[in-house]
Image (cartoon, rainbow, N blue to C red):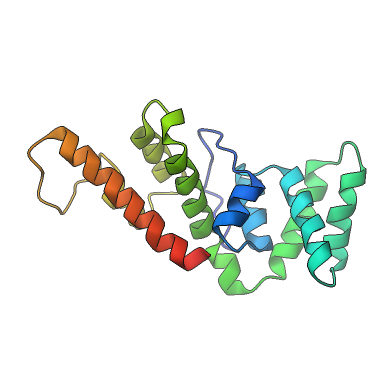
Length: 177
């Protein structure tokens, strides 16, 4: 599956399910990746299952996962096991895209909440490392040498990093919505 065991969540960023659903079409591979990587909580997977029950004929795994809402304390392993089963039922293409889609969602969350961070570009650097240095992030990571001509001031160069980050988000948004 697209779930890279090298992905970590150093800064313990949590993505609300509603935010993710507003910004991307989610499937079980995406939810599984996010929960296993720590970007979502297992209760988000259960909530997603409950929503799926309302939309179509549920699979046995979806029903079982949604049923966990009735338990006060369900085992994380149970949720992850069911998620892994559901993720296997998604297309291979969707499974492979889960990491890239979650990267977009994490970066979008941080960008939209950049005022909450002391140094948002440092957060980008952590994400760059956590996701194993994806090439699509290179244009907005401070320490990566740029192919662009340096601008006359630090402030202008920083502004360009933010513009490149925003450009990435616009491009990715068109893909994942």
